Each structure stands twice: as C-alpha cells, then as structure tokens.
Length: 316
Image (cartoon, one colour):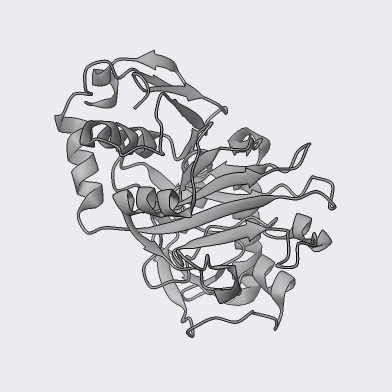
C-alpha cells in the first residue's frame, strides 16, 4: 500500500479508480478487505500505474477465488495458463487487422460454464495511440429502470446459456466455434439474480450466450433477449474505459456486460493480459459480513458516485 486508499468515481453509474494501492507488492489483509468491499459496491474497479506480469496477475486473482483457464487453448499464457492473452498481435509479430473487431459484441464471460465466474481482470501492456477502450454496462441499473411490466415478465424466467448460441453469438460464429478442451452443455440461470453481497437485483441476460428461456420458443426468446440488451446498453448505463499502459481493471461478471469498443486504427497494437476468477465457497458471505459488521480500517476513505461518504454509509 502506497498511502491511504481512496475511490474516485469514473462513470455516471459505473466505474471507480482505486487510489493508493500497489498491486506489485503483497497486500496485507486490511488492504485486501478494503478492495473486496469497494468492489462489491463498484463492479468496475481500476488500478492505474501498475507494474505487473502474469505471475502477479494470477496471484491477485487467487486472492479472490480460483482462476480458470480460457476455454480456447491458443490464448493461454504458457507459464501461467490461468492467465490468457487478449491481443491483436500474432505469434510472428504481425498485427491481425481483424483484431480491432474481436470481442466487440456485448457479453458476459463464461455464463455457459457450470460455475459462472465471479470476476475478470485485464492488464494493459500495449495500447493504441488513440481510443481502443473497453465498454461496460451496469446490469444493476439496467434492471432498476425496467418497466414494472417487464420486471413481472422476467420474474421466474430461467435463461438458457451456451458458449456461442445467443443471437449475437450465432451471427458472429456460426459453425466456427474454435478448439476447446471439452464440450460445453447448456446452463440454466435465472434471468434476474441478486448480488450476493449487496443484495441488488441484476438483469442476468446477455446476447452472446443467452439463447433462450425455459418454456419459450426461439421466435419469442430472441427478440426479448435483444430488447433487454438494447435497454441495458443505453449510454446512461455504460462506462467507456480509456486504457493507459499499466492499468489493471477488474469487473464483476455477476453485475455487468462488456465489449471492446473496436474504435482504434486496425494497424495499431493492443496487448493485454487477462484472467477470469471463480468464487471460493463462502467468499460472498465473508464480504457481506465485513460490509455490515466491520468498520473500514483507519485512514481508509471511501468515495462513491454520490461523493465522499463515511464507513457507516456503506454499513461498515
């Protein structure tokens, strides 16, 4: 820790920068507890000016839970397979001009896995000279602003998730699914979930992996999925993160969708390291208990999108 940590809001409803934390150094328990509490309230959390490698990224991920390997083998880091590459640079050093368009459709990672992920993190090694950001949609705010009639319609609905089977996934990939180590089976998940720490309701539908709902045919399901995605990705719910080298950004897979903006010059390099983390058993309960039963450590100031607040305002 390089000073008393603070949070600085970045977007209208989403995005916060954690100040005063050096992730290249071992984190003491008090600092990590502060990060966990901050992350529960701010599902897109940025740490700037970090000096990290794959080992440090994997270690930080393990503090939250169990890092998982990328489904596509070719993207895995050779020394730390739980870390993967997100890059438009081929192994021979050539820039893949199609890379600017990769992962530019709205999605939530790995909702087709038996165990849905807790969070993902990206670390910027090389960034374009202009633009090249990542966009995040606040699925908490998206649910809050749905008409009551839509909330009633979604109540009790169970979404069906596949690896590339949603309206966007099918159009994007078709029969070209890529090489994976195992076969993925359809996963049923509630269309509306609740954050395990804050209790806030979340719209848990994404157009990449959600391909239907139990008891509903495709002709009805796909327009509903597309309608919900259009609602959730309105500008008022979206934070655009402009990358700087050394940014480490973590986002809550339970409460957001994301996509690459696809807005930079295709000949420019964009190289990042990524890891996706599954939650450890009991971790959410631990953070929730900290949130309502403990006070923030002395010297830890908490800022929110409403401005500075004391620990009591977050139930700490």
